[in-house]
Image (cartoon, rainbow, N blue to C red; front, top):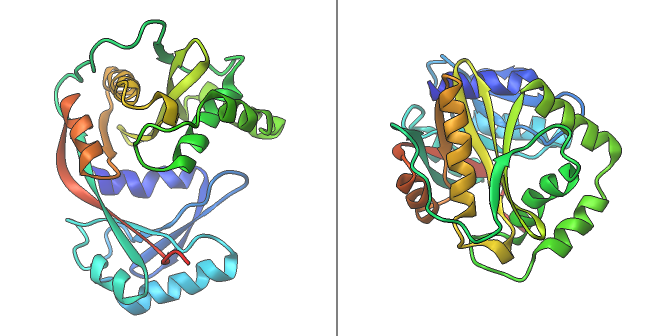
Length: 263
């Protein structure tokens, strides 16, 4: 299920460039960059030389030298990635089992709902993820609505129009937790071949440890399940995985992420 999804979902917005045991997905038009993955159905194995060659291609194109795979279905990639000079991070991969359970009561005044393409604060909704991931980690911090609104003000009209179109077309489904100060947490699911992946769950540092990420995840999981989709996600670490397990996900595998060492 997961391997077929990972091969299918980038193809809506990327060119799939074959490199033997690896496929490099290259973004068409605007949007975040993609990555290389083991070629679906290739007997392998992925070698150090394969990864070095793809890294050279990525470097020539000026795109991130990123590689992703499922450890259990491509067990030799981790060693090859390390041998090719990449740093490897392993993330729990979890699948929704049964009915997602609510995270409990939220703070007074906080609501969780789906994002509409005509939401007047769509720029602020979109800015939450960038601010949250930029702050890193899951600890409570001082970064909050002021930084979100400053980032939203820098959002171009073209980027906002693309986001509205993706939501309107159903290419992505987003959920947002809002408080008196506006959007506080966001999450998204993308889907292909009857499968949905929840991605980009993020909470402003000032609003963390209040169950907002879990609430957003539950709403997305219920929406995807009600649409007849099988639902999965990857957690950044074991601590985050336990949050997802409490709302109805079960760990089934491991996602491997490799990128050049930070300098």
